[in-house]
Length: 140
Image 1 (cartoon, rainbow, N blue to C red):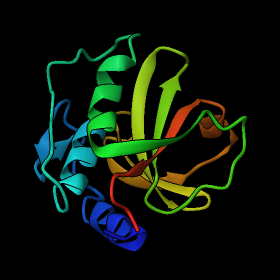
Image 2 (cartoon, rainbow, N blue to C red):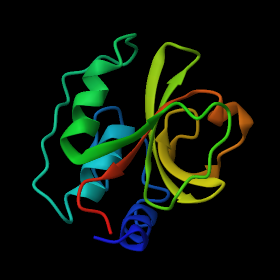
Image 3 (tube, helix red, strand yellow):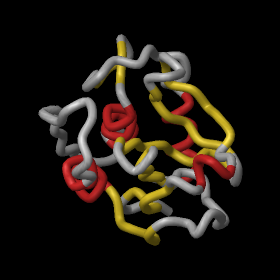
Image 4 (cartoon, rainbow, N blue to C red):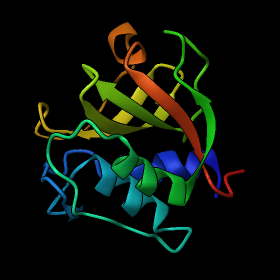
């Protein structure tokens, strides 16, 4: 799979409604988006028994680790992002969140506050909350 294929697949989900633990085009959450994008190229391992608000990022990281390889921890507020990378955020230090990079300053994510999967700018506020950056396994 190429970085461009990851981005194209993620963009197919734009405007799909946010549904907590959703895993299809009727609704998805941030982990569901990652699993559905990965499902085009690999056998996916999924887990939906996570709570809506949890401090233990390890539960969400298990989903990411099954499909990705870590590039780095955090960003120091800035780093050059590559298309198709997966960002793991800790929003306000409490709520894990995932997004797929679609350009040096853009990401696609299923975010409850937006109500759907959207492509939004990766601004300084988002960058300051990055927990880690990942590449899908086997990405070219």
